Image 1: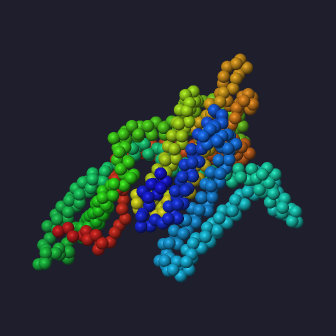
Image 2: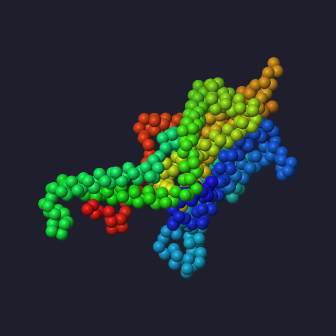
Image 3: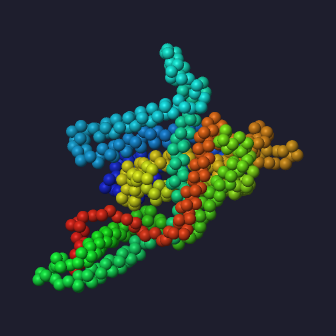
Length: 518
């Protein structure tokens, strides 16, 4: 899927092997990380998974190791492999790149390696500076009078007393906070807009060409109407010297509009000729079911947002510690639809795990849709626009890094969307009267009889040890709901059926020869 996605969006004339490998590996690793969450919950709910044929037993310890390996690989890809591929691609765009390769052999690779080293060094400096503000770090730089003091400062900074757990937790919390920005804008936009995109559909290339040809014919009629007002020269050309300023201005506007529409038309003809590609054919097969798919997406999106909203209200009203612990909730009080659905589905194994995997992949796809729809931006400035077979490979590499950070935010958000289920799965405890009850942090029996999922234990530790991050995540989810509601209202009330091709770049008049209306 990652390979197809790369070739569907990347300009084939700009593509290079290193970018393709980095994109495929990074996106594949991101998808594997999301699919590990259902496995984590399965293990605590049903016990260890044993495969007699493979002689493998998947336990919670193995899941914890898998999380460590996959997330370490994700960070390595995000901060080493992807930046190297990006800088290599930027160097390829230099006019003298081929000459460098001919003379120096690997000059392009060495320049990219130097840039990547500086980038990694900059990130390390940021982390070291950030770790100085980590809760629990007590040693001060001012107290370093001897070498022993310096060793003690480094040990306290990296939390070697606890095998670096607090330092790693702080670093992951910072990266998750970066991913929350993408979660608030890209994922919220994707969850709101993607169902409408399926429900309303887009014009086909043929339909848009017909509309464009009608518009081009209208423009030519207007041009001839203005031309007919004035006498022509002996050679048949239009005499502009006697033309009114308003008519001359209108002719110039019609020429620019005609050029743009003709360029749209030529681009649509190219797309029709490439209609045999894999993704267009697949999407064409799904067109008869687009209403069913769109409605299903709409239901999932509304369930996700409503569950998120109800949990946030629950935490605001019933958290026993409030700001001091980041509005952590020990036991759910207000009804949560997604949480309740998963808890009830757990009676019919393995339906809950299948639905959870679908939910996680849907949110992942909605995030990708949001990045593609909005483009890659820093604040209000657009860096890369992702368009079918017109995107730069560097844009796809930045997409991988954005998705890597959004994935961390997704892991955190699942604990808010379905808090009980993602923490304890389908586990139950026996009350004093012998009846079964769901596990929760409020019950004393839970501490003995229930296991907590690896992902829940990690982010709960961050919430308790570093409540400032938990407070930031809490209000970021409120911002997520505001963005979702705004985009949903706009799509519902204002947005019509989208054209197949949105905008195209201007081209030279000499290249197209479009200004002759006669």
